[in-house]
Image (cartoon, rainbow, N blue to C red; front, top):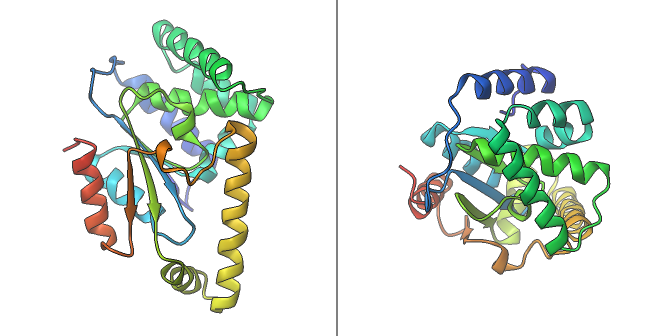
Length: 223
């Protein structure tokens, strides 16, 4: 879904039309229909997410798009309304239990974020990158992945991608890591790097990105 040629509003409108055109079906027990990708900066998580979405023909939701969706009350409400009555009730009940169980005090942004991510999860057939989606969605139909890599590899990747010196790449990584840790700690009272929050942790310093994407697909039981 991340593209330079379409605005966020166009992306949202296209997605809404697609969902409305599809017949809504409940998730089957044990069938994993959403993959959540959490990643260390420079580890290649976004590339892996793109490869998975293309292979599986799943919708791809990048962190930036979800963030913009969650910042708008109108957008989150519009997406919420793409569900049928049963889907709405299920999602509302899940959000209520999530707030109670995790002792959350959601501000407006988190309320909208939970609606947006929850709606994506109810429709399924999606790969979600970042924004704490793995802390929001229920475990049924969900596969949670943390993508990591050695620091040296990540510095090199960021330096090449942004065409900056390795010193600046290192600072970018440190700042991004700090921001992501703070976001998860603030909204979900959790440690983003805790392995217990994930079904799989993959090291792209060990496997090429193409191979890593295939490993995740197989582990998630998706063909």
